[in-house]
Length: 138
Length: 138
Image 1 (tube, helix red, strand yellow):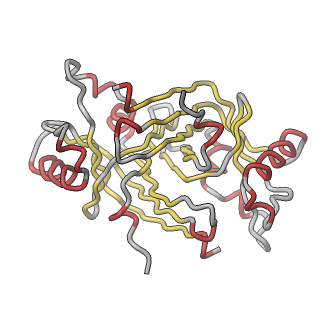
Image 2 (cartoon, rainbow over the protein chains, first blue to last red):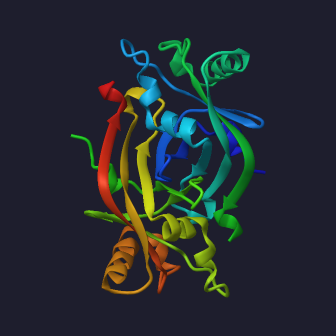
């Protein structure tokens, strides 16, 4: 029995698309609580509203869909595997669900002890489809 | 001086979009030869034409754009970094450029000694824009 990548992985990659269907992809930190994946948008000091201009944020707002891949790389290709999560996406700026996701994120990533997320907005992906692939299964 | 991720990384993640602007992302192996990134489409035995139904292939054919991220994960977030490559994408089925990319792929990945790429098609991303981000620069 392999571990559940969605529960154990430290990093994922988030793909979004803009209004012209141009794809964009960035590495993200995240937590998953079925059926939602949450990824924080770190605010930068002195530029409190700049986060709205991040492409992943603009794409989520204008397009509303996301695809997230969580994978394991290994030079032994029989050990390759990934989980693909697809669904709708939106931004949580306030509210109990945002607050709870921040608590989960700060519990998962001790790095936030030094740089608390505070009132950071969160991208929420509501997963509609989950696909798994394994190199061992080929 | 840090190494050039595009030259040294073993894995990348390729984002594409379908005709409805729905994003898709998968891990890929690749080689880069300026200004092109090449990623092979492994054919499966007995299903020689199934590769055309792969979503990354359908998206490249119908949409024609791609975004590729190559990143380094580290629990020390000052060491995080990524390179984002964006551009047009198409599929090479035959020709000198495809053949050359196969040679480069087989040289980079010794795994192909046991499973030669043969006449595998190749996704070609023609990079128009390169962005770099480093956690140390924040």
